[in-house]
Length: 307
Image (cartoon, rainbow, N blue to C red; front, side):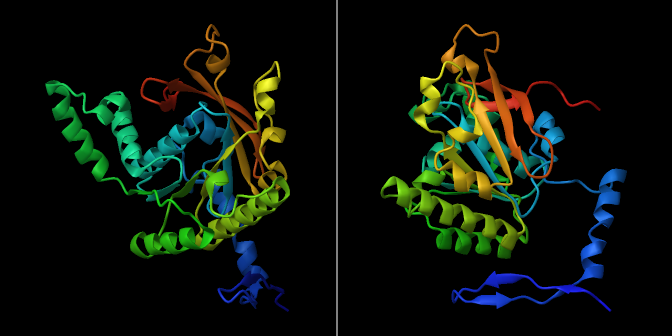
């Protein structure tokens, strides 16, 4: 007798549809991947390009919802941009960022500033000297080859994200990462605190379903509440997430960003950012450190990768 397990999905008409039952033999075949991972013949996830982070989380796994949170000035958008750049350049996979925080031109300036390097403010003001023009042209040609997409539509809903992602998948077959900058600005997140928490929950659940449906990783940026600022120790915790209940529940991975230099200019950790793995449904938690270049608003590996 073959044991079969049915899964349920919600169709576009809003009705619950039953998918084809899956034979247990097919389900158990997935265990072959464990052997392949152990032998090093298959990666456990899409590599982020940050070696110490990948060592803890095993890369970004398809079908997962990841939350990156931090107080203002911690570098959330910059970190998301670096992830897109790393995944598209190193893994050669398309990435897309839905941006409600910055316009596409500002994202372009940031990518160029990271690559040249040159301060993005110089690019925004057109303050570029003669020697930099050639470097700028080279960077534009190089970055234009990368499959990175920016959508800065002023109104962003789950349905619009799904529709646009499906178009990209039809073109590229696979998406390495979907980024949302940021969660609390999405359509449907206004209203009083009770309704806001409810709407946030609907959105995070919908984004998690999208990750599974499209077999990719969805990364959302989220704010932390102001309670952090009233504490002597500013290092964030999971409970600092705004509307934390549903975000924490739906997220497979929660990363909290912290830069001690922002609060303590004389710290020994100047130029260092902590990425705190506060939740990891698939493995270990803890914290890793990266270099943060405030001049060019980018994150870098603290040390070269061991060969």
